[in-house]
Image (cartoon, rainbow, N blue to C red; front, side, top):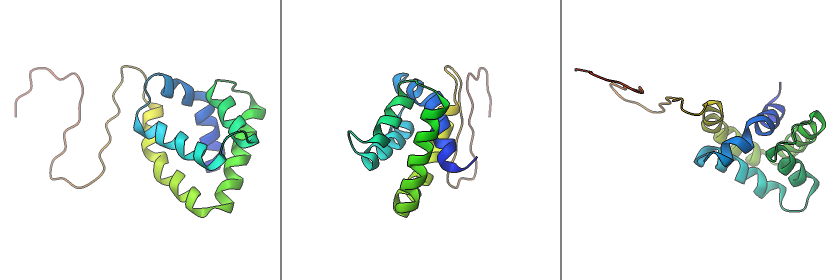
Length: 122
């Protein structure tokens, strides 16, 4: 699956849920970047809105994927922005309610990531 199709499928199946459930900065930043590029009242923005409203039909996903692919080809800077935003958003979208997704980006001597620890001694 190409990147545009992956974005479309993920936004159609999990995007609205993440935004409604308090999808934090990563998902919101991704959706906002796409909305800025597509503008208002366009065919492309209608496809994005349909996906985010849960109208998860194959033709809607295909239309969004085609619009994303075309925009990324026309504007490499837009493609770069989506590729930069995608890793954090995809982690956020993959998390179930009540679950924890540990993500570390950078350098450190020691990193500890956990959830629900009791009785720990160092």
